[in-house]
Length: 584
Image (cartoon, rainbow, N blue to C red; front, side, top):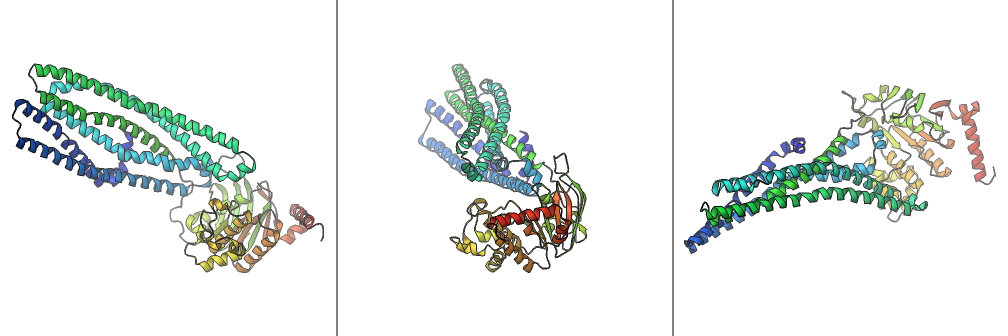
């Protein structure tokens, strides 16, 4: 029952609704005591021959009035209690989503999307059921059961009440044991569902790769295995769940047997009437629901508790980067100074980058080149303040980037990552994602700068064409250029292109770079690339290997060195010559 204590914060927020709902629940529990007593009194009048049409009409009127009142009250307590539980689901979803948006990339590297989705769906649904069905079964079982027992004891016979309740300890012990087992098994079942959810998400997202490698049969078999595990673990939960009703039915049957046997004895001894025994057994019938409710309560509470523990464990993961007290609430601008002696990704044994220093004046372009894994993207991640645990200092406009609010820092930066993520919406809304207030003309202008406008006009619905999930309907080059247009629409102080021209041809690359030169004469740009043609115009070029800068300068200076940059440039020139058929 600790789950109710953990949810105390929510019950305080919805205090009025729960008080009204529970009050109506209590009234229903009291009102349902009336019909059994009326039935018993009517039977005694029939037995004594004193029942008249007037008295029969009176008893029927009472029963009908009670039924109508209970109907109305049950409608409203359901509205109050179950309606409030929806607000709990809403609050938890928003709390969880807000927390997830604050987490660093390392958090998502360690966790699977399917598992996070399971937390936000199945787990929240189980907790919502606790605040709805759990509250209902708790108070309904306590109030109905308590009032019925009191009515049996004080209005009929306390001795028969004690006898009828003798099997109850058996039910209490067995349901408590079942509850513990249910908690353990449901947690395991939820984890299995997370695994299946993750598998489904990955398979659908990677369906092109799966088909291209002919991996469908193996993937289906893998899915079938995980699906079978979900079934197996949920069947284990169902086996425990299935024990509640038979156990309670057995206890109820024993109570009925004892009540009828000893009730008949008391009638023979004239200690009670036939009407009293009928009323007593009717009351005993009312006790069936509270007993079943106890079983349901354990089921709901243990499921909710296991799910809430999973949600809490996620919410308790600390946010690695928070805005410092008094952080500067303005968009940075000016020169960028990067001085990092060492940075190591969380969990890695060795530094990813070391001894990186450069100064980039406002309006200049920086080019960063090197092989895959050289550390180019790592520099960009540190500039974007995706990680803070580095030795050194990074300043923007003469102020350390940690002193800015993260939101303001990132407003200054238009970032086009290697993995071009597009949303399953129209081309227009994908470009306008960076500026929701942008006009059609502004979006079109950004698309022209990125040299994707002509391609868009050839789409079936132009800018209204839906690109599919992650831009599945587009080519790699088209996705890159739409991502570039999205970043340009921000008109950022700093534009970062992280190998964002790799999927376009040399002619288109040259056209895009020329557009950037013309439109961003006073704005800063950083470009990482494997193709040296993309950065040869930069005022500063860094050539990286194994996480450090081995050569630095302008294109002409690096060519004069005749080092690694020179070798790569000559090799790429030769490759282009071969592609053109060997002609100069």
